[in-house]
Image (cartoon, rainbow, N blue to C red; front, side, top):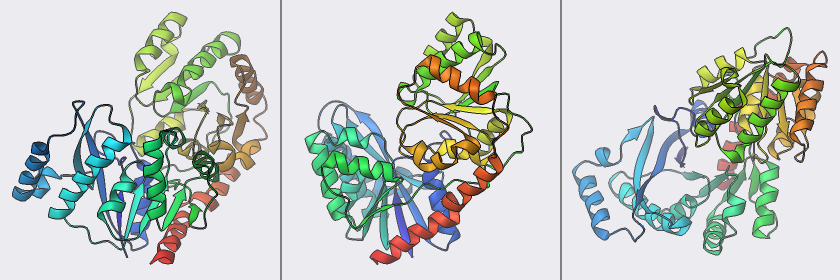
Length: 392
């Protein structure tokens, strides 16, 4: 069986953590004997106007001369340059993704049994228009329910789902959210296949005690990920509960400057450490040095990093964000706490303090082993191959 994976996110030397969940799935498929190639449509910002035909003519000229030069392989994935006018939204991306895929596949043909697109907008609609092979869509994005409120994007998404032989969501929570946003019922060809947790990259680390004084956050430094709330809670915890507490943030994003200024203004700069995005091996090293992950994102379709933390023996404090209660909610007494979304900063501080005083009942080993039964590469990949075989 040969599968063509199309994804906007895939790890590269400059972005080792970007789309690692897609790479985990690719590795899982290959370990089961599936032949997999990867295409990554890469956005190049263009002026706010239609892309001149001359630009695409030049792309095709270069493709004729040396297709491997204009469509380079980076980190094992073929990059497809797509100039996208600023402000054009998913409709503009769809038009130019179509052209990019069309030219790339003309000079570097695809011969796959299944086309598998990760993230529906807008690539799934583009692939549906350039390929006659069975289409599988996996939705990960936390933005999709907001995006389909735009009529043009809603039409693109609905058309893609109509073209798909199978539509996969990474959680039942996300599946319900999409059905609600599209005002439709869950169809028979809709499935739930979770992300893979790479237990080999996140081996279990035995910890003798949990003082909850070495916090860690791993992810994008965005407000939507609860980073501002995290810093405020951390500051309050240091002042009210334990002044020796430290916070390590592994990731990058627009809040990096704000974090520095906030930490300086609150006198906690020496206790806050920002580390740029890391490989999985290095992330595990940072997790091993911490004794608590605090993840205050209000909305997660899955929440992979929390599972990686639990897999490696690290307890997690999270909000009831959708993904958390579905993926590890039944294990919360063994590996952490899931707090109400409307919890105040003071309530979160008190919850963490109460948790730190009652860690004797934790059983991270049990939690880690329980996660393996649901999210290991073999379990998830087997489900995916079953879907492929069902549509061929």
